[in-house]
Length: 97
Image (tube, rainbow, N blue to C red):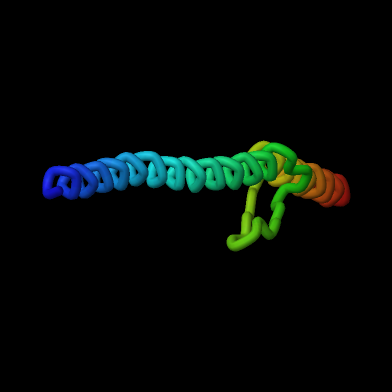
């Protein structure tokens, strides 16, 4: 009788270890999949940016994105407009003298 009791205890321990080795990685993979889905959503938010500064709410965190190309174009446009106005005013004042 002792032999079958020891066999049952060892068999139960082995099944518990095998179950643990199956369940914990599966749970870890499930969390990894959720993080990957969150990453894809955030990446899509960055790629679909239509504004110079874009602010979105992504669940438990806020996403603020500044598009460098559009920001540079915006600043260059302001700089060009300032130069045009400054040169025009300078030429107009020089002509009056």
